[in-house]
Length: 126
Ligand SMILES: [Cu+2]
Image 1: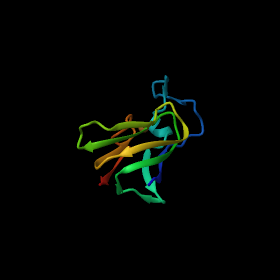
Image 2 (image 1 turned 135 degrees about the horizontal axis):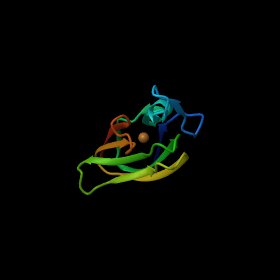
Image 3 (image 1 turned 120 degrees about the vertical axis):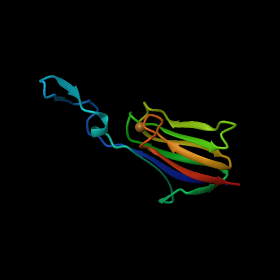
Image 4 (image 1 turned 60 degrees about the horizontal axis):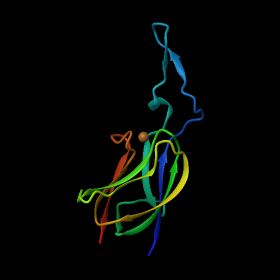
């Protein structure tokens, strides 16, 4: 049976250009991305945070709101065989549906560019 869950990598900006600002010494510097972009990621199903799923094939509906982030899913335990998929790449922005088969274990989802700030995990049971 196929189930559907929605995932969101959220980012907010009104302007794709990177703004600059004056440095105290009179030069210019780029505003750091952190100040311009949102850094959040979540995985939900039926509007609720995903904690655990049954093994199977799922449709991930990803809303990727920037060309700064990606949405990656990986099984952490067991780590072999390696199960990892970039459901959206960094350059992609928009909505995308990707199927992925989840096998039992401990999984994580994250943006590989900003994993420390943008990550979450869930379990997959038989
Ligand atoms: Cu990111």
